Image (cartoon, rainbow, N blue to C red; front, side, top):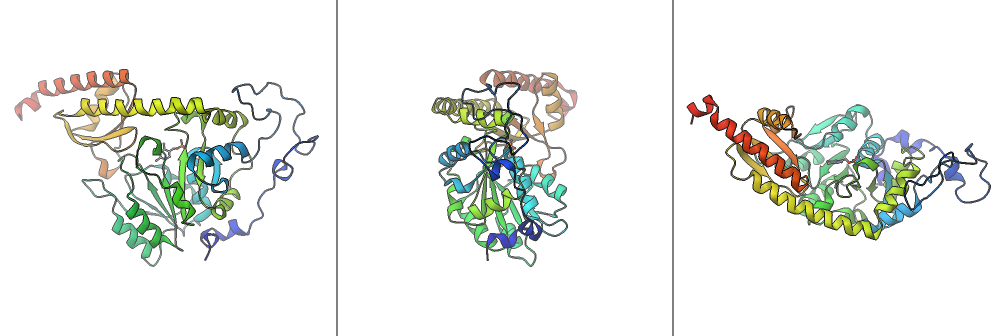
Length: 373
Ligand SMILES: *Cc1c(COP(=O)(O)O)cnc(C)c1O
């Protein structure tokens, strides 16, 4: 049994596209890819230029792969560069799910892209909803689904999760991986890993051939506009994804900027930024505490908090009128009256707190509220 047996047979059988750059990397007089001999503008967007714009970029940029492998503590063979995690999610579903046959397992409320990627591929979706009030993961039902007659092909988990912010327990992941062995790929999306002190699971990919960890520069590296992330898994699984990923997924300026982002000076700025976000999160939680209209708070481990309020629609409306945008989930059954608030700057939290003060005051004055006490 190999991980290849879980992939779509047509992906395994196909002969992957061989690009000019992958057939003949390296130096010399390059007359093999119909490129222009000169660029029209210099690639001087970042200090650390990697290539010139007239040439196709390296399909998997060696230096960036090496830096990310180092950052995540894995060999380079475990790293696939992607245009953010959304790209990784899409590749996984396309490689492992046959339309109308191989399901993904989703644990709503969760990140919306798992479902979208499955719908685009025509893959069925097995839902294992979280517990109604606590919003905790229902691990027993996930295990039962994996042990059942027709197990899902991919299990999507998120740690810290979005929008609930909780981290996966190592014991739970261990049992899920065991139940999934030979049956399913287990994906742990760690988009918010930098915000938590909990141990991530990337090192577990050394031991588990069916585990995939998704990392991104979008959140904890403050670079959502860059569209750069990585799929982490054993080489055999990465090899399957490489059959499907476009030949030149990352643009030269993106590669160049991603390398700049991993310079020691920027990494120490990142540590300061993460510390500031943690402090601001404490401030935000203080501003939310003891508000009569806040029913429940899930502080979580990421750069946002989830709250349940009396009336999410009116809170959203009120904040919008004050120029503040927060997120509600009107179509998620378990998130009725829940609102997710991202941890912003200190000034932004102060503005939000003022808007919440005005909202509380307005509700106290409202006649229906007064009548009901
Ligand atoms: C934001 C987010 C992503 C998106 O990552 P990109 O790298 O920007 O595509 C992935 N997963 C979760 C859970 C997220 O919240």
